[in-house]
Image (cartoon, rainbow, N blue to C red; front, side, top):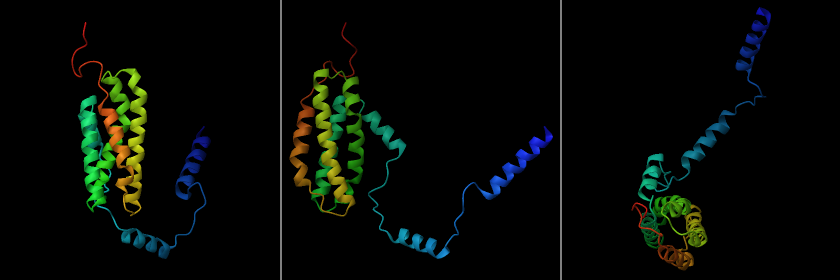
Length: 177
């Protein structure tokens, strides 16, 4: 028993010190060059990841159908303004936020008592919006002209289709008996 324990301890210590896999020599010049390239890359101050707190707050603000649609419309207006006014990088935040709301929209529709016969329309128009906003986001990330005009009609029609959908019952009201 003691021999087995000592052998196991020795093996564990040996593996901790030497590691499990082959090691490669570190080229200090290559590491330095990589650090210089990374520090020289431009950083977009508008493309900052959302925090968990911001996402949670957005979730709380958009728990009901009407509130979610209102936020989608606000984000769409901000995205249009920023992508057409010469400062497209400023649209990053609105693009990130609207993407979350669009991901949640089918669930929001269910909890807001939107009739099932509208769920396909919701899914289709949500996808149209996500695709359009993803085109803008990809163009901005690539340093290209966003091309809002190319997706403007799709965004407008999809938002109008979503706004036309109403919950079966008044949101927030207790169920009728």
